[in-house]
Length: 426
Image (tube, rainbow, N blue to C red; front, side, top):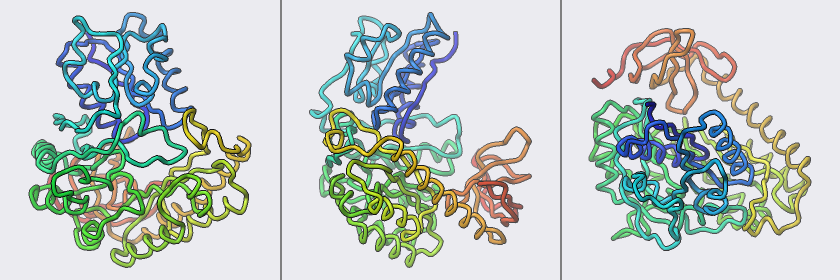
């Protein structure tokens, strides 16, 4: 029989949780099962998940299909009503080994996520791609942005204790993982529910001190208003913390930010990027931006468009606004879909131009690259400190090496190794 197959939609946290579920499903002997880890961030994300479920059943008529994730947490009965689905498991339940045992298992196993007050630590054996791994440090969200349904799929904010984070990271490093990405729903809220209320920056400082062999550390999406002083100092001083931050900005107009119920202003976002760039000149920013949010005028959109330049953004995740049933924004006056798509295209074009400028600026410089995998043509692909993709002719997968950037092929840099900086772990 074949191993369980997992179809993952959505965020990095889902990617991490899929690996946890893979281990549980294998231990439970679910040979040939298909687990669909859904996303609920937009109505389109849920539609894609349902489409994938139907396709999976057509192609695998005898397989057991288990559906989980945020969309399943929010609408378990809706997924259970699909003829293609055998079982529905909630977001908390999917991280428990016993949930995957088939004997006497209920068809729908979903609890009240808002009643959950702790996040159980999960230790995974490592990803198929051993060079980089995600580690969950936080779960849920206490904020209620008007466009977002995710708190109802993930529950309120809760943090993984530092000792468990250290344990997971140390285990991954011992297995040869060179780079760890800390992830969660709202990781800048880390620690608010723990004894002593340690902030994210304090946790990172202690983690790096207790796992000295960790070569590279990255952070998933950060709330621009919640960076604590310890985190700011680490960004300035710690070379193992990569100079690439992805900010949850969403818009660049103050009125739209207010209607989104975001907690930062445009000027605060611009000032944060200026301050961090002053502290660490090589830093590169990514950002989430929504185009065509309800009530957005052309002038409001222009403020978001200008944010690309004013903040010096390089990597954009652009989403045309998609109304999510059950959110306040879905009841606001809607921007025509065609206008949303056109504005999203303009934002993406601005992002493409910014990325091209950045990549061109790297030519002739040196960089440190983690080699991740071999391409079909034999060349090796890795990522620089700033997350730029880099192609090399030689090197070892899992090694971090210094390179000289010689050119660019589309959105990928071309480099030549200088010398091995660190050997891959055995």
